[in-house]
Image (cartoon, rainbow, N blue to C red):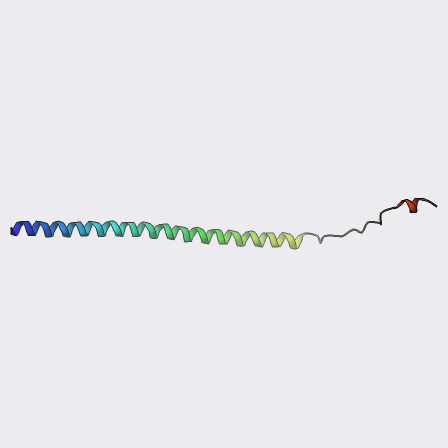
Length: 81
């Protein structure tokens, strides 16, 4: 009977340890995924900033839009002397 209790306790201890190891492994994998996502977000934000600066520089170098006033449309009264 004593051997049975010892083996039951030992197997329970091993089972709890294996579950703990599995949970820690899963947690580390999730932390790696989150870390990678944060890194990618930082890269995208930096790229967005670079593109906005480039766009702003291009807009500042572009000539200002000119508005050309066209003559008023001719009517048939203008054509008759």
